[in-house]
Image (cartoon, rainbow, N blue to C red; front, side):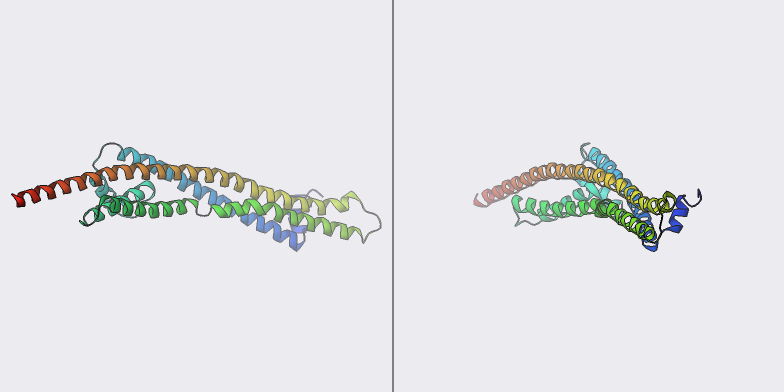
Length: 242
């Protein structure tokens, strides 16, 4: 009796439908834990990289020098570095076009940073929907297995004249295990999804703040460059008139 009432024993004695439900829930739990470990590593790394780059950015280093350092590392820049690299590259390109005023230069620069920002947020949110799905449907899958198992137990009782607890207990136990497994798969997934969603929102806010501050710096540089160009043109005109 003890062997039959163990988890393995109940699983082996369960119907094919309940076994399928249990196996599916185990696979969903494994998938969710793999994603939890992966997302935790990526999001924590993104936060740390953002802090380190912003510390370097606000240290007073020349922006052109910082851009060369980021580009010289090779590979694809991520996070705040990606925003900086995309924005400064577009700013440098547009500023070389003489027919463009400061407003047009900054419009193109902001557009490049918005594209980079969108891609970075998409990378941060990747697979979070899977955790949300596991957290939302696992209890219902487990409940389905429970209902099916209890239904089979009562159907089996209909074929006997006298029902005993010993006859009913295994079927009800295997059915309740399905519900427990559904909760076991759902609870960590829901907790991780909520935590990671808040973390993504925090990182996203940092990206937006950096982009706004960086835009302000570049806007001042663009205005200064336009002012210097206008002054040189006016000086050249005066020389020609003289």
